[in-house]
Image 1 (cartoon, rainbow over the protein chains, first blue to last red):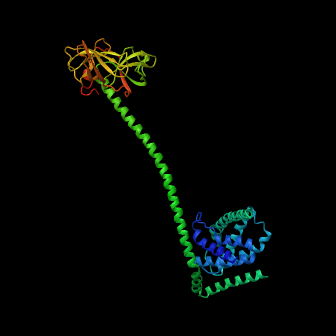
Image 2: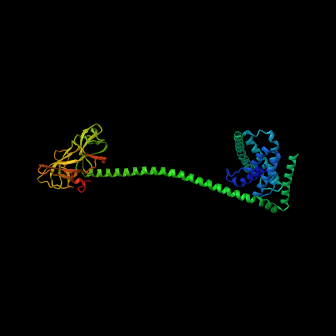
Image 3: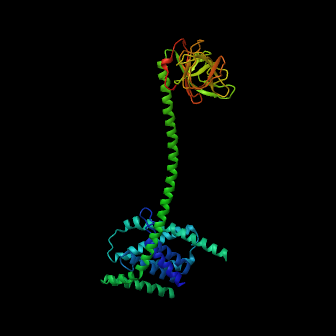
Length: 162
Length: 278
């Protein structure tokens, strides 16, 4: 379990640093660690989601070279919140997955912006939402849904094998 | 309860980190965390570069393959075009020679294109795209820039059939240019020609001598090259002897001809080359 956690969170964070530039579409890259945190939170619950979000966010903060702790905090909140609400959501439906991931990314962006305001972050909110958060949210939505579908398919194959 | 505790710890850790940084201790914190993550990050970056290299090699290979296919098609196309250009150039050359001959000849002529060939041993004929509509008459002489081809044996509405010199039924009055020895050129079933009925006395013909039309009979103008002596068949005490001729015209390859439609009582020897018959 711990190995899986380390591999998933570290892998997600570092894959983001290396693979995200390659996945860029029209200068928009997906937030792979956020997708990983969401998937983990849905499968493992709020505590797991919270710790996964913290570690993944921390790694991103270190890699990005900004204020360490901002993404750790936002992602841990997203992980906890989704882990807690996951049981009540029909997350296997693609119609839920795509908008859900979009909304979560936007929520994470809003929380991050609010937090950064404490440290006098200069970028205007509207511009940030239009050109950074919303495009990334859409990308996350589709990529995350594809990952959910791939995981479900893998699980089905495993079940059939056993 | 445990979940709230975990969340509280995490939030507290984050806020602590942020507070430490705002108090001016950001560098040691970042360095400590980077110390752990940098080696893993470097390793993954190397793997990423290797994967990207493999991918770009594959893409290059794919592009080279596509380019290779495209170049092959282009090469094929260019070959066809080159053949067409060569063919056109050769046709142009042939037509120029035919036109030059037409202008040199003191006769009325009609150019024609060969549209069919009959090459069996029984009959050797060519069909041209000129016929009754072009006022072609039977027995019209047919020539090429190299020499005599034959005569029109059948005239149809849009075509005419030419009896070639090598046709077994073909006979043409001829003489050897150098010795003026007269004879008759006949076609043979095996596709060759023979100069027959040459008088032994006054013969003295040699291999390589040029044989031209004699003009006797009025069908062919005098002086059109027919062939060159390839071998002499001396039959000892016989009254006549024979010579095997090599035609000056390659009947199998000729594509355009001239039909001599006007008065044929002319000596046209000056219009033809004397050196090699072609």
